[in-house]
Each structure stands twice: as C-alpha cells, then as structure tokens.
Amino acid sequence: MAGTAAPQVSVDEVMAELVTLEDPKIRAVNERHGDDYGVNLTKLRAVAKRLKTQQDLAEELWETGDTAAKLLALLICRPKEFGRDELDAMLRKARTPKVQDWLVNYVVKKSPHAEALRVVWFDDPDPVVASAGWALTSERVVKKPEGLDLGGLLDLIEAQMKDAPDRLQWAMNNCLAQIGIEHPEYRARALEIGERLKVLEDYPTSPGCTSPYAPIWIGEMVRRQAVS
Image (cartoon, rainbow, N blue to C red):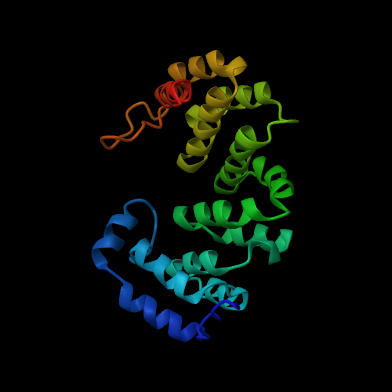
C-alpha cells in the first residue's frame, strides 16, 4: 500500500505556523546559550513529522535565515541530495549552536561527503567550522577508527584544548572522551590529559546525567560497558 503523501504547503504557510509556536520564555533560555529561536523542539518535530520529507521546501526554509525554519529544514530534508560545496556553505552560515549541531548530526553524517568535509573542516581557522570537523572525527573514533592517528589526536588535544574557544573546546573534549572510552590502549593517556587540563571539571550537571568532564565521563562509560 502506498504511503500517505506529504501535505503540500508553501514556505509562507510554514513560517506563519512557526510564528504561532514561538514562546518568549523558551527564546530567553535559548539565547543564554547562543541560540535565537523560541519554538519548543518537540512541537517542531511534530511539524516535521506531519510535513514528512520535502527537499524543495527544506531548501526554501533554510534560505529564510530564520533559526527555527533552518532546524525544521534539517528535519525534512534528504541529506544525500546536498553537494559537498553546498554543505560546506551551509555549515559556514550555521552560526548558532543548535543549527550547527543538527546540521552535522542529522545531515552531514548521513552524507557521502562526510569524510571529505571532516578533513576540510578539521584544520579550518574558524573555530566554529573546526568544531564540526572534530565532531565528525569523534564519530570516526567510535565507528570507523581505521586510518585515524589516535595518538596524534591526543597530541593536538593536549596542546590546544585548554585555550580553545567554547564550541571547539567542547568538540575536542568529546573526542578525548571517546578515545578513552573506545580504545583501551589510549585510555590511561586520555585520563591523564583530562585530569591535568581540567576542562569542564566544574560544568553543571543535572542529577542522573554524566558529567562532560572527560575523566568522569570515561570512567562511567567504561563501567557501564563492564556490567552490560
């Protein structure tokens, strides 16, 4: 049986709906974290579920420049239809943390251009772009480490993470933790680097959540692996 067709709506209709979902309280919270949208993400996902996959509409929403519209675009697009240069340009325009995070995780990671972009972004002089390269590198550390110089990555983290800008520091810290979690032969060194640099040691962590401080994070995940 054929699936239900996605409802055909205009970009103007979608933008009008997003306006109705705007919540000033949500925007105020998000703005403290560098994001400029006020739509509840659960409600945004419900809109995406209703619209289904619509590449043309996704591209129109992205071009509006509105953050909520961009997030919706990333939920209804077809990741494999974007070219390498197109994804590179999109990342360089994705200046807010949530848009960058969703673009990398929901689109670039599913793209045939992911590895080529990882290499290009990793050494980019823009720390926001470089953070995307590090995020893709962490993905490879976990899923496809063959060919990666893990020791060399630890050298870079040791030399650069302490003074890196926030988003790049966060991405490097994630890579440090994943190396320690996934690769026992590098675990002691990863722990030593984390303990010495103390990056995110005091990061506020909600009850029941694991601290992003690498030594705690590595220890907790290794413990879970041992009991699973």
